[in-house]
Amino acid sequence: MSHEAAKKRAEPYTKIVEELPKMRRDTVELVKKAVGEQRKTYVLLNKRSEGNAPSTIQALMTVLQEDEL
Image (cartoon, rainbow, N blue to C red; front, side):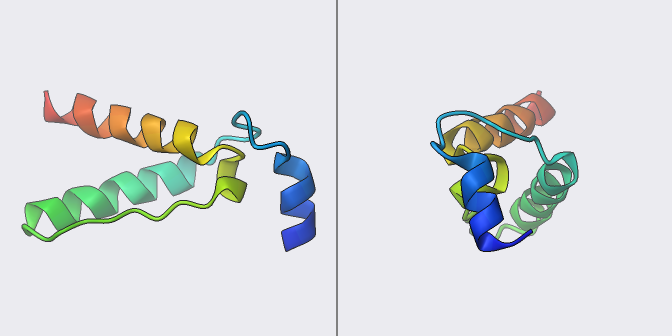
């Protein structure tokens, strides 16, 4: 998808417009691997990925926290 198409799809960036389950799974797995190797871990997330970066980050954090139980 082009940059402009992604921008129009996600505006005004107030909610998730489309969940990307594969991206979420891949991100969680990479974070788990890095933490398991005792590496500092940073996740950079663009608001255009799902439409609202804070909501996507919260969803990723929820999965990671649930996996710790």
